[in-house]
Image: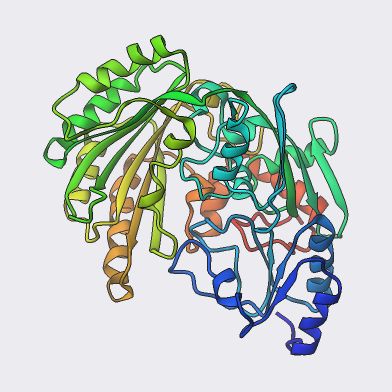
Length: 458
């Protein structure tokens, strides 16, 4: 923070250096742009730099350093921790940077840092191509990728970072660099899982694969009274899955607002039609579902199924952990905790990672979680700030009950704003020391610290 805050005149002078827009408090659009997806986050930056190109990002960063302003970087603005916005500093907003360039011949795509996964899929599905991406279409490509990237295609094609070919970023010194296996490989290694610790990433290049426009999968839901049976079935189903099949389990609420509790499975099979029908048959044959939408559907449609359950500006508090197996004890905890969930918007999500996602060595990228298992995401979500304490307490209680059964570390994209530095270090395991070295090389003063922070080695 500056010792003397910049004057309004000084802040507005940034507009003379940008092709994009500068917003201050009171300007039209300021209150819309400053808000991120999580309504629990309500911060007011001194200035918002709405960048439309790399030069804008570089100049906004230089201005922030000149004025000694705290820096927050916004891509899609989806991160639950709310690190994309700060009080009294500068928000470097990439959300207007929407360029997408698809090369169907070589199966590549380049996207700017403000692109969302819905926009990404819209561009690639014109050519029947895709890569592992977010299961909620409004999620930003940048944030999801830099944290690792779970998605429906991870069994077949690995995490999002496994399909990143190169990245462009503006470093703390203002230098514009390319990072790939052949250019700045140390930085490329760190970017694949290390978050926004190393600069403002303005562009990404990904490998694409033939997927869609029609795939097989969808939602199937059972009454909550058989939740334990559904989770037991899910455990058996994921014991030996094929790479093409990815299934998410969830204890959730009916989308009609009734508050009816459900035990649901959301599946994606990216193989041939015949293979998919055979693989999905056990899911359709199990129990007596109250909803069965499993069958052929568009790939873009699959990636929009969860959208309604994550409305912008709903209040969110998340906790998460990894477990190697869904033991009877873990299943019982999930069932019991959801039974007294205080909000009809909250949910418990279990994601299984396997196949290509876990075949790489833990140190192949900075994302170390390469052992087959499950991520459990505890989502407390509500609308009325008066009941915030009860909802946050429920999420924390659920996490504390699961913790004795959990492995080390967590998925950084699911971490909240109150996670301790020690947990960040634990999450990267033996990769943490190397990440600190890279941080020290590219951001020795820890200019980019509004993230799941990796302090530079000293």
